[in-house]
Image (cartoon, rainbow over all chains, first blue to last red; front, side, top):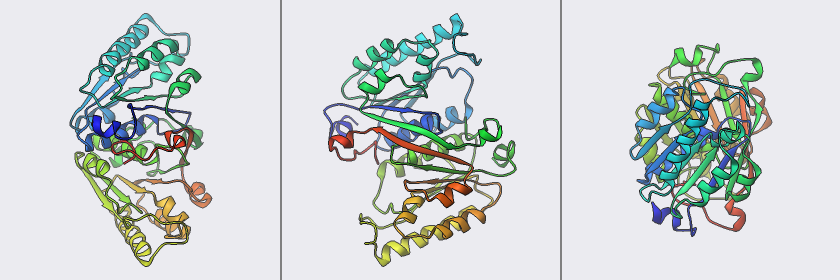
Length: 181
Length: 181
């Protein structure tokens, strides 16, 4: 894959998918589908996703060359109300991400919901900036989650904001198995 | 999957992914990953994609229960400069979509780039509206592509606009194998 990603760039790019609309994690999963379609090796490191998202976990398990690392507790919390466990889990995710982003076997590394982990003060912006700056040139990295800090947007090559135009949540409907998770 | 999709809604929803940013087709592919993770059956009908997008084709081939139907010629053209072949291929895609959306075996049907086919006058908005109104209640449908017409946005349950905040194309870089296709 190196040849593929480096064919037109001197380095693997930094993507950010943010915004309040649907399609951030799903876009990253779509990139994973394309990447494995080219025999690429992928690591997806999930933050704040201790609760089992069965659809993602099982669906990704069908794709060769994809490793999924899930971190986070299984409970939701308001900003400022995180526990030691939440901090420890985010730190664990950061360490896994550091290992993956410096391992030449990977072509694509997805840091799922890492923007949200920063927003919830589980990680510092500087943690993420250091993580990205230390990555191997050959590796393409994708950061997902709403609330992407401007410092991360500044260093990114490719930023898409998913804007919610219309959503059934507006009709007070809950997340649905198979679509939202 | 019916039970899954109908557990909180009286019908499968109509999703639209539009806008000029990255992540429309990839989001649809991510939904496919989740759907097959729940043993769902999926049809992806692609419009104006006769040119082989190997990453998508091979990547999706790893997912059980996913059928890919590709239509369109392998050439690009400006709006108003389409040929009989382009029209015939779009019509063929519409017919495949009609069959899939009325086949109870499918849980999710993706109409990839159908919005663009309408924008390029290969299909009429009324063709797509009729298509959607005829779908089985149990089937979730996703329409992708920039230029989604307002009539389609009106009937959709869930609309996300992908907004390009930053893109390497701004630096005059071409599409890259493994990421854009």
